[in-house]
Length: 205
Image (cartoon, rainbow, N blue to C red; front, side, top):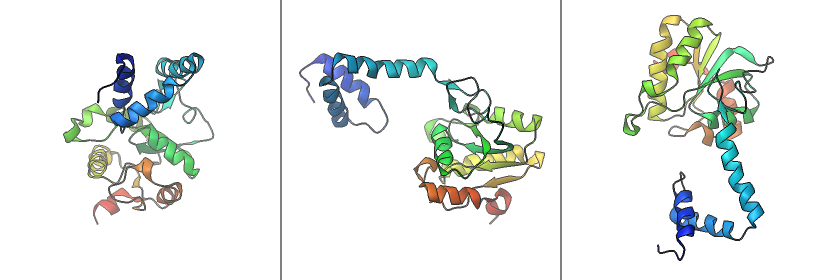
């Protein structure tokens, strides 16, 4: 696709580098921005710069936060004896939207996926093990997507934590197989959390 301006082409290239944005969609976004006022463009650009400068990773759970510790970990009303293990911040947002979970989280930052070059050492697994060895929780919930990679990660975590004899549960299969957690609707996800099952029982079926 030949573009009449190198500056337009640069913006299209940047948009197209984002996940799920093709070149046609990138061009449409760039042309929309071109119609906006300089003040709007400055606010638009500043939002990205501010996000990159100021968004932090929670030191306790790995969630996204504006502070050293996220609002969930710093909330004394949450049940800190229950830890829900998720793939990324989108899953935290999805579960929070159900309003059916009152514990805390641990964000792995991905799942084990050899095809994508991600192994256990690339995820926040060591910090999870350290955390639960120091202060054993009443329950750990595996809330990873119902995918092959999610199941592989669940099993790996289970083997790593098994010696601690913790209560380990996982979401009921209300979340369709092959679905990433943040794509599930709120009602289905909420029920899956409330009807969670012991991991060992589920795995040995």
